[in-house]
Amino acid sequence: MENKEIKEIVILRLGHRPERDKRITTHVGLTARALGAAGMILASDDPKIEENILEISPRWGGSFFIKNNANAMEEINQWKKKGGKVCHLSMYGINLPEAVPILKSEKKLMFIVGAEKVPGEIYEISDWNVAVGNQPHSEVAALAIAMDRISDSDPLLKTFENAELTVIPMEKGKKVVHDNELIEKNKRQDKC
Ligand code: SAM
View (cartoon, protein in one colour):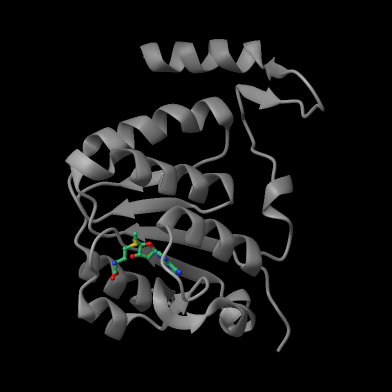
């Protein structure tokens, strides 16, 4: 089968515990954004996550949404109704290399990542339970590797539109270009 480029990836983050998982859930969102996902749905109530990630997004460009306090099963069902497919990342699933061809061929893909124990109904409703190697590690690592492996173009070379800040890669030191016109424009919009 010919691989079509994936157009829309969303992440559904399960089991986030606001007192414990702030950092790792923020990293799930930032990683998803950096590698080209459209947004992250949080199946817990923690507006701080939304605040942290949406503060970064306009500065570094592109568009990324966060949906806080969502109902996981409703989100999955709605996604499926719209023709989307669901890939639950779990160390117990089929190993990623086996799933890459089919995942690459999907246009709308939801990746589900857990925190603590993931309910059995998620394994059932998912189109695929996919392991990034069958050893325990991290939702951030699993998501990053999966998104990289299923991408048709190199996600590390992705550029972000309307970025206030752009890093100029260099061997040593740090160079960041500021788009002052855009920064001023965004400031004016914030005040409105
Ligand atoms: N013990 C939990 C369970 O039984 O579901 C998993 C905890 S793990 C720290 C948190 C999340 O990381 C998992 O829900 C899964 O999404 C992801 N994860 C960890 N290792 C993985 C692997 N080898 N492959 C795919 N996903 C993995």
